[in-house]
Figure 1 (tube, helix red, strand yellow):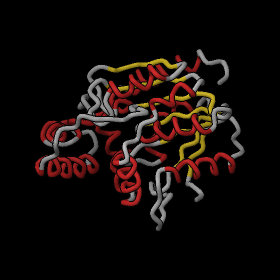
Figure 2 (cartoon, one colour; figure 1 turned 120 degrees about the vertical axis):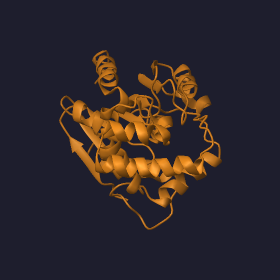
Figure 3 (spheres, rainbow, N blue to C red; figure 1 turned 30 degrees about the vertical axis):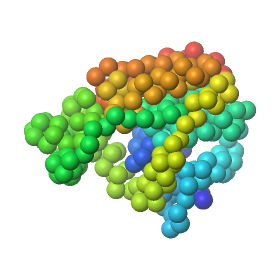
Figure 4 (cartoon, rainbow, N blue to C red; figure 1 turned 60 degrees about the vertical axis):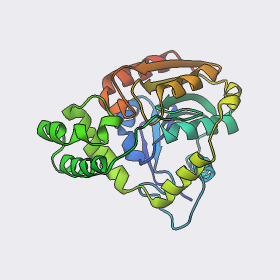
Length: 269
């Protein structure tokens, strides 16, 4: 299907792939910065955002959609920045098109993703619902963060409970959650139940890679991300203390600085 996409800037193309839940605009923390020097391409994946479908689909359909999008945009070589699910798709693109993928930036992702998330209680869901609504109406209010946010499931997604982080949650996370379809959720969990694991294939990927992780990530652990970095032929790994799965919204300046530094050391970009 034809994906809805946000294209910004000029220069070497960077395909920016969101996670689950997510949409292209969820990647604004990256695209607003990188589009000053590169061309950023941030699609809504099938079943997310404005790329809705009435048919069931599999995770492999995302790759077909992305190939079609890149052909439509006349993109031959490109770098992929993928967050969570987006990082898994980035690895798949690199494995199937090594001559086109010039580099990888993997954010909170892994080739064998595993987590250690505690069981979710009804109180967790209650506080998360209240927190999400209140924070969406009044983003980043400290009284809300202290009263609801730190008691909700946000406590596993972030460790830095600051107004700035909660503004990102209101502006990007809530709209993405509301625009993530049940079909997208079913496609993802079907793949998870099948035991996704591409670790043994990673040595095939020869392009330079930057692997970033939050030390307290409970959704895709830092150990899983490190395993991926260790198996990639040309990878650099950063693990940020006191952050979790949404660490780009916790410490955006540090993450962007590390990405800038890595890109400057890659002359092909």
